[in-house]
Length: 344
Image (cartoon, rainbow, N blue to C red):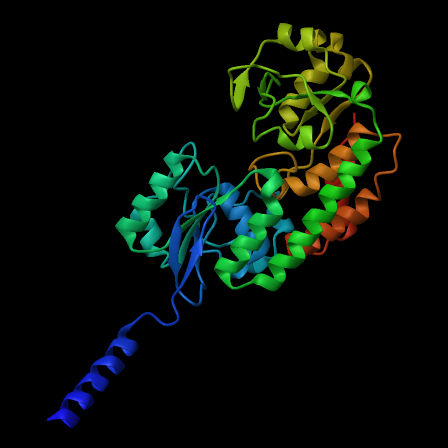
């Protein structure tokens, strides 16, 4: 009888081990949530545009699909094998278009969101995880957290070596730009206006996620609006009162408007020709979305803000970034349009 019981117990233990998830592990995300992950993560649903871009740069082979389709001018800057991934929509942010059925249909091993870790997003991640049974992680998307975010996602995906390489590049870039900005006294830092939209009268207030790389580069964001957050609409009279020395936009319609509307000619940046069109393909260099794509925008901003300081060869910097982060080699036909329209 004793032998029978031992054999039975042994069989139950073996059955239990066989039926348990293979090598399940846990990860603590940026919101302090402990999430159980499968040992191998092969397919990931990115919850919004910032997460999509971040995941694409680190592990494009795991990307279940784009949050929106690539535009015609963006496609050449993405390797052919990734251009036609399905469009899955977004779970988070403004204009969410994805639903839980779309998430389940993509059969992901993991759901990943990159950006805010505020209670609203924590609640959403918990709810989606409970309803789908798929682990969901949140990673802090603040620009200053980029290197740590790479290492955390690398751990989640089992891509630590590549994540470490990208994190070290990130830390080096931040240090180099900090050193450039440090050469300019605070009272000589340029006053900058970010012009969004077709007439340039939408902007990001100081401290917002949409303008944080301008401030990290040492620019003084003129849109200081205590009590307001994020994106705001302003009047031309307010821009004239701010009278910025530099204007940054990525909207060609807005650029054309500011160059042709006589009222904008009273703004110092327009008078002195310091109105700049930021590159935006395949992802914006300043924003759109606020993800790791801004790392290259930081280098570009350093060159724009400090034209009298040696900030490095922007052509070489751009080629290296696109190779390392976007998985594409830039020939002259692809590189030239990126940098041709950056100064006016």
